Amino acid sequence: MTSGLASFVIRRLAAACLFVLMVSASALMLVRLAPGDAVSQLTFTGVDQATIDATRVRLGLDRPPLVTLRDWFAGLLRFDLGTSSQYGQPVAGLIAERAWHTARLGAIVLLIASAIGLPLGIITGSRPGGWVAAITTPISIVLVACPPLVGALALLLFAASTGLISIEPGRLAVPALALSLPLAAMLERLQSRAVADAVAAPDLVAAAARGIPPGRLLWVHAARQSLGPVLGIYGIVIGSLFSGSLAVEFATSWPGLGRLMRDALVARDVWLVAGCALAGAAFIALGNLAADIARAMADRRVTERA
Image (cartoon, rainbow, N blue to C red; front, top):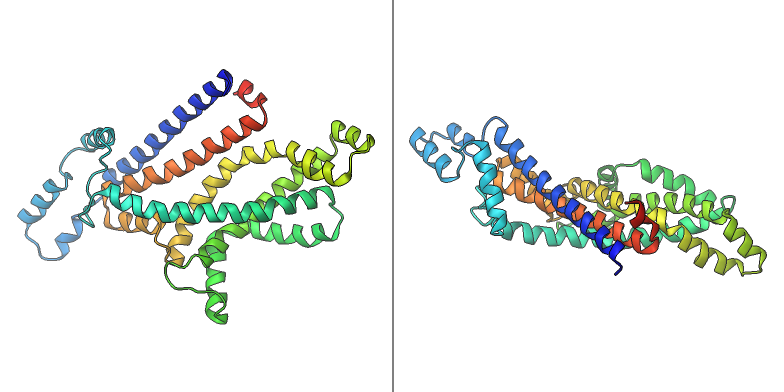
């Protein structure tokens, strides 16, 4: 690794860590400053005030929000994310279990979307007037405009009506399709535009004039030249994938961070909300970091501009 690339990675890594800390701290403060807390519902169950106050003290909800934030950062230094008031278990263990499911779903979705969207984008970008482009382009536009949650509900209706796809809780097919199809359409549109620009570039026109076979020109030279712009968008793609997966996970009963975050927000579980926000921000930050590193390795000029 060259010194320029190494310093680029270090700067991006520092920015990623700052992003994760800011997101988790903001989530914690928003929950603490909002009206009510995790023991507010006890007032409606006939529990005496002394028990409510004791529970609030036990959970640390009697302390000022800034003290809670200080305790959160102190816990992070010890890799301690606190204890969930809803489950009575360490937040780190709950997050680790659910984060694995979300990461597995995200990896499969990215693999499917890339395997479908990138090759189709190369074809439609090189032959915009062909029959593949005529079929693919309108479908991609519709899928890009369709929110993942709407797609998940449509797939659930289709699966329930036909029985072709299992809708049992924990099954991967529906959430993976609901997330991968719009993502594949987005990648197809991006790759198509990048390939169209690459094919029209002077160096590829000159290479075609020198007699390089069209297949090699398209799938090697044009694909490699168009890789930089598409990799630059992958960080945003991963961010949109995670934000879309939260709603899809809840709708399809996938046991990931989305359902855990929803349960934590409903229960006003301060430490669990902050832990879920930390994990979600870490996924987004790592995705952006990986995309930046891949783009820098594909085009060393990126490290000079950053």
